Structure formats: structure tokens, C-alpha cells
Image (tube, rainbow, N blue to C red):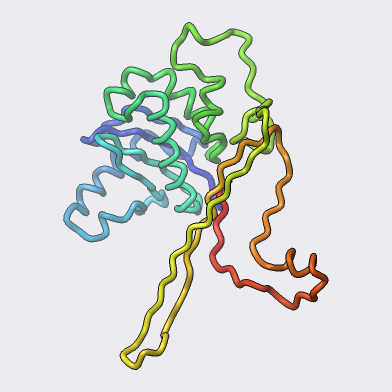
Length: 244
């Protein structure tokens, strides 16, 4: 992310602040009121559908709405809007993991847990841990499950924040499915104007620990094994997106 978030707000459907967390000290709670006023002024305008709102004071607001709750960030720096939106959606997923459903009532009933999650998921305006399974290992919703000497799981201090420590299986297995769809645009003369293939490799693994896996996405490995020379890429892959 290019810049850091200054504060995060959770608002009700009328724009009143339910919870807010100040990360950098350069904005106030009044920013939520200014945002909601600006949002109401643009009601009916096409721009209201934009998740990013700017005001004249140099503050940018990025928000999403889930049920009767607005999740809002305010920033004075030039932030990556896509990263912030992804973080807000992950925040919704974490809240739903803890509270079953994210609503105004669930936030009011769990202020302590909400603040704990906001402290762990963002530090000084930068997103940190957004995996609900990892967060639930050291932030418990039920007080009786909390331990005074509770230590963070190894995944928190590890470079890999989405995989817990000590995963073991009796048998190491990997299941891989290739799902592809072909799109072709043909003109009136029967000539192909444009064609592309959209595919996904869906993998389900049962691997112990943190093994290194090599996945070949073209014919290079096969051709080298057969002693045949490879020139350039055997398959052109555009717009590749890897899951973590």
C-alpha cells in the first residue's frame, strides 16, 4: 500500500459512530460526520456508487456497506484504494467468523472483541493479519477461553500468516483440477476476431509442514526431460493470479 490509513470507523445506517480506531492521530471523529453528510449530498448521483469519496480538507474516504453497518476508512495519504477495499471485505469476513453475522447489534454486544481485532488486523494504518482462523487462535470471543499466559501462534510471527504450526497428515496428498473455458469472437465472414482461454487450477492439499512444491504451467519440464530444446515459452499465460 502506497499510504497508510489514518482511522477506521464503523457506522450505523444513520451515520452515527459505533466504533472508531485512530491509528495515526491526524484525523478526528468528526470525519465520519463529514463523510456521511457528503454521502447524503450525492444521493441520487451516479458518483455515489463509487466506494471512494474525497473532501476539500485533503481526506479520502473508502467505504463499503454490509447490512446496516458502514465500514469506513479515512486517510490523508495517497492510499491504494484496492488494498483498502480488500481489507474492509476481509474485516467483514472476520467479524462474521466471530459474531456469525455483522450487524449493528452484534457490534454493540462485542465492543471489547471488536477493538482487539482492530488492533491486531491493522497497525499504524497498515493491514496486518486478516485470517480469521489465525486470529481466533489467540483472540477468543468467550472470556472463559482466554488464558492469561496466552501466546500468539507461530503464524503471527512467521512470514506465512495463513498456515498454522504443526500441521500433520498420515498421508501426503495433492488433488489438482484444471477448469478452463474458451471464448471466441467470430465476425460475419467466419473469421476469428478474438479468442482467449480463461482457466483456473483448483488445488486441495493435505501436506504436512511447509513443503516446497514445484508446479509446471507449461511444457518446458516435459520437453527438457525428453532432451528436446525449448525456445521461449511453450504457453503464453496472461493475467496470472495466485491464491496465497
